[in-house]
Length: 382
Ligand SMILES: Cc1cc2nc3c(=O)[nH]c(=O)nc-3n(C[C@H](O)[C@H](O)[C@H](O)COP(=O)(O)OP(=O)(O)OC[C@H]3O[C@@H](n4cnc5c(N)ncnc54)[C@H](O)[C@@H]3O)c2cc1C
Image 1: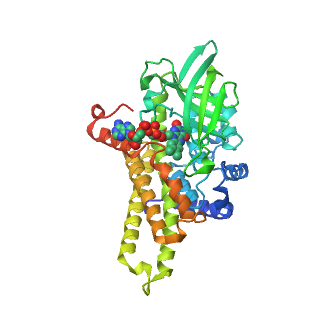
Image 2: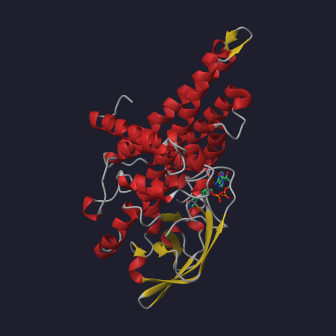
């Protein structure tokens, strides 16, 4: 990529080495599991990849946002299973900056070392895109809060030890009434249920019900009513990283298709000689290249401390759509092989679909982009 620095190029090489050495063996087998293997989590933690947004004094390994994007793209090229684990370890330490020093000293080393797995829950059975319309309730009771409600579609929700969730202090409050809480998932009153998903099985999506769960007041993250804006700023970052995961997967399938089109013969020629397939390849390669540029531009803006809400939404909409399309086309190019459960592109086809929904759909991204262009009075309240 033209604008990577020498350090970022070196980081890419080191991640590539790591993924080929540590993640490539048996990645296909692990993709069939319903959880991320603890030894894989430990290997990733050992490389320092779970502490990329955590200061060194809490056991982290702070890294620039472009390099974090490189990590997501490279790892997903080989193994998509750890993607939400990595995402949660980016987002949740960023949120914990708004907790007390003692709380950060207690929790951040546990997260960075992979001894505790976090997950994030805003979506509820009755609301997803309209993220400010949540109903989960928090009631202050002396030195505690009592939380009730249901979070759903929570990635890694079955495996996680802690949930960063949103709740409202008053039912009639809008987005400005949303507060964040950090909830250990062993507490009484918590019930989890697994989703049986189309793809990404190791991500173990869950519905998490909370029935009067009591957490100490210091488990509130940020002030009351400050949760929504903080989460939306975090999502600007995470949706770009998620899409780079999709681009990594799509590139891997495109590479498989290229090999096939060069070697497979039909009608006396390698199939790559036929423009019906080679033009599709040209389009997919162009779309992925454009998507990558959008992603890394958004991350560079973030590194420079500049607003990147519009660029992140562009990257998410465009990148998720064209990554899924490139995998679809690669599967077609592979013919009968691609349709088999034993083929990586078949799995990527199912895995990449969810990226078009999680972290915000295309329509919601377009609402954000148009609001950023026209002004907030033209957009929904995010
Ligand atoms: C793989 C995956 C992982 C996920 N992980 C998490 C997680 O870890 N934590 C979490 O909290 N959530 C997670 N989600 C949930 C995700 O964030 C929501 O699914 C998403 O925000 C969309 O919400 P919804 O599914 O309720 O759709 P809805 O909001 O019900 O929307 C349904 C359809 O209507 C469209 N639509 C809605 N409003 C408008 C509008 N104003 N204009 C035009 N079209 C509109 C949407 O684009 C969509 O196509 C995950 C979802 C998936 C698929």
